[in-house]
Length: 111
Picture 1 (spheres, rainbow, N blue to C red):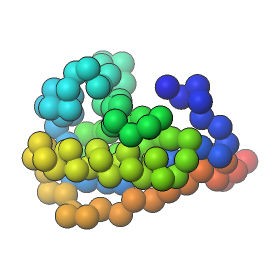
Picture 2: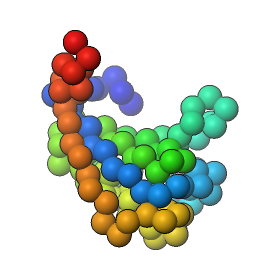
Picture 3: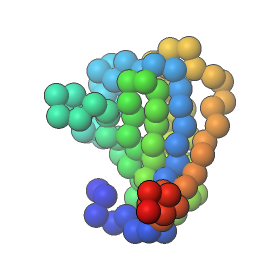
Picture 4: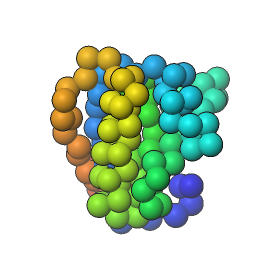
């Protein structure tokens, strides 16, 4: 999943209100998620967008990883839409902002 990430890979980030990740894992379809809360505190979701993996956390953080920016944004947008369809976002904003970064931008900040 993350083997294909390079410095030019895109990361999209957004926030909703608290999310019941147990219900979300079931609602998204167990065939499309990896959810092992004892090992990792989020849902790993194959959003259906090409080459895009999305991480969803109970605090409402949603992070999409993809080779290019349009795919990472599409993955996060599709995930937000699906969470809202399932009515699993507690107290979220109607249209949350989506921020984008490249992996290189994030690693340069720590250097």
